[in-house]
Length: 256
Ligand code: IPE
Ligand code: IPE
Ligand code: MG
Image (cartoon, rainbow, N blue to C red; front, side):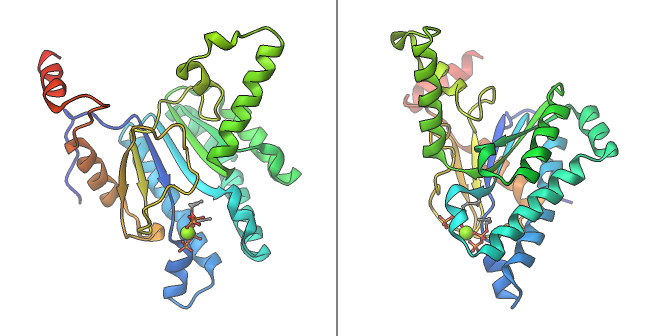
């Protein structure tokens, strides 16, 4: 059993995961990369459940980037098949009832039109079935690219301006963020990357402006709830200054 988290310290409202290292996990064992992705899928399920148990309101998993389409066809097909399995499992009567009970709403970050039609249908279904749920949001980023997301948002805003629904001068950072796929979610407080790489790989570029970053060498299939709690504990010990001085942060904390 790992140490419980302090109920007093503030927990992140949004945790985003770059689930990296599935391929290496498999290669180290002489297995095919797809076996690593399957193991990674099991880790995702366990970590998502832990986040819900910990009361994290918003969770985002980077499952497949826009750049990942460049991988060998066999691997791309395998990753799509896993996404399909994930959707099927969450679309069963029992799991939809469970999502309702927990107030869990699913969302996909990425352009639905990039997906083959059979996947599109399933994604639309799960979005519709869980739309009324209030409590937690679980975002799966699939065929996701941070720059593409920003360009998409700019296009939507340009259309609004054309239709005279928005004046360019009225655009603020807050309004802009509503046009992103994550609209309605707070920005990630904590970004976790497994696999040891110190880069963001085109993930949530706009939203991670002030995220606390936790990089671990643990490969995603080995990432356990225990280490998630460790990452949250480390987050709770960081001083988030948002451009201010340490003294200012301390004095405002005393006033609360
Ligand atoms: C992350 O694992 C999952 C995806 C990118 C789909 P990788 O497949 O990138 O694993 P490594 O980085 O090769 O070990
Ligand atoms: C990032 O992992 C994307 C996902 C985890 C889905 P990659 O393995 O694709 O990232 P790079 O290529 O090492 O930057
Ligand atoms: Mg990788």
